Length: 132
View (cartoon, rainbow, N blue to C red):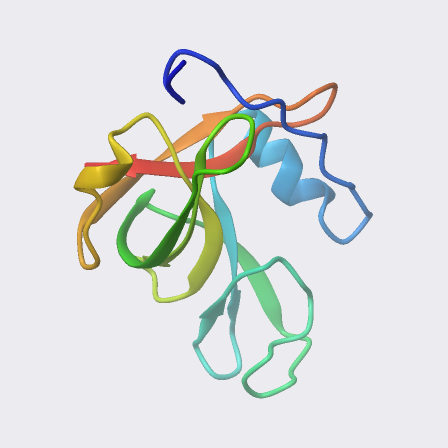
């Protein structure tokens, strides 16, 4: 059975007060990243303190949902094969994610990808990417 025919079961993410707005946006089909108003850098994963200048002056911005495949690895020995990846978002940050809904043999570094959300078991959906 191919990965496209059988879906992996995804556990629900842990939602904390610091990430609640992020997961609420995911439930609406939007990807949020944090942007520092002190140094101007965007970052992901969601956290209040800027990892570049350590300022607490950060705000949520909605990402475009576009990115580039930076690196990936296909897990073929799993019950349902999947692709782990780093995707560099158009806004700048690189995030760890999965590449879905595609032929893993056709993935290429530098390839354009677009955002999709996949349901979890009893929680908000997870942001993932598919070739654009």
